Image 1 (cartoon, helix red, strand yellow):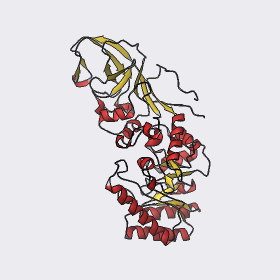
Image 2 (cartoon, helix red, strand yellow):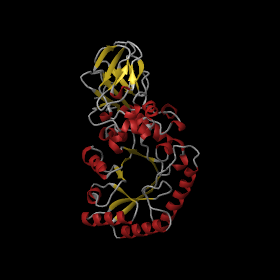
Image 3 (tube, helix red, strand yellow):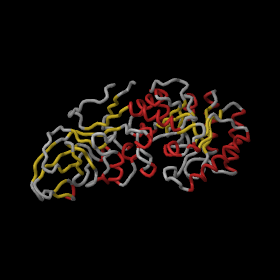
Image 4 (cartoon, one colour):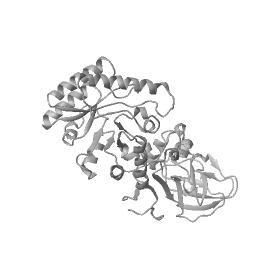
Length: 390
């Protein structure tokens, strides 16, 4: 679909409209933030719930030269199904023993290696495949998740990677790491991690590693830490028009626009008397005679149950609040006597242009982060991609 927006269709119980023009504009804005670096568009977790293949295509059209995923299965699906250039770099970083190393080597994926077990498995896969693996060595500079520890562990990994490279089994294409607190301006760990990253990459390069890229910058670092851009930046949530945290600024502060709009068709509007209990447990009781609207999305669709009695929804031009508990498939809003027709649009979140709530508003209501709000939208909510072409 290429139209700016799709006319509301009440036959769809609910939908997540994905504005690919906004995504392309966000990628261009992020590239302007890091003019000396390449950009990896992170499309893990089905592009944070937005649809990996159309979002990957849009990001590449806007100038992304790398794609990033968490799992090798995500990366392999992109290589096989997205119809992108054969030389486009695709990286994946979340591996477990026995993973599809050979398939990754044959698909020319860049694979992350955090320790010796992974290096051994990828070199064995390269022997079987008869071609070198593209390997990126990950340094744990302070996040404490994946990555090799500084000191002897890093020295061994670098040494053995260079030995495998000399045998023609791998090509060390990158050195990388990940921030713990880049979304907290001024946090002391930021400077400490940057120092450690410089030290660990410098050691590897002194030993003979010649990486194509060095990278550590996630979305907040791309937006606020130019000293962390190195050769490549890896924006994830920012690409979808959501600020990594309210503390560093709003999307508009960075020239970004939210990409997803989640809406549903009211399944029922009815009048009820005062004192009427609403939803499981009767945690909400009507204060007086009123109208209730039934929204046919629930926690099975990704609407957070933690947003019971707090989640905001735009109906008939007004903000409403969830009345009582979110159920598996539905929730209720108190319409205060207003009587929109059944089938009218209820907007849970979007860019905010029409006065609707945003994903950040939902994050505040549910006590979580906007990343989780968009990523958790379930598979039974159809994605409607608009503005697929320039």
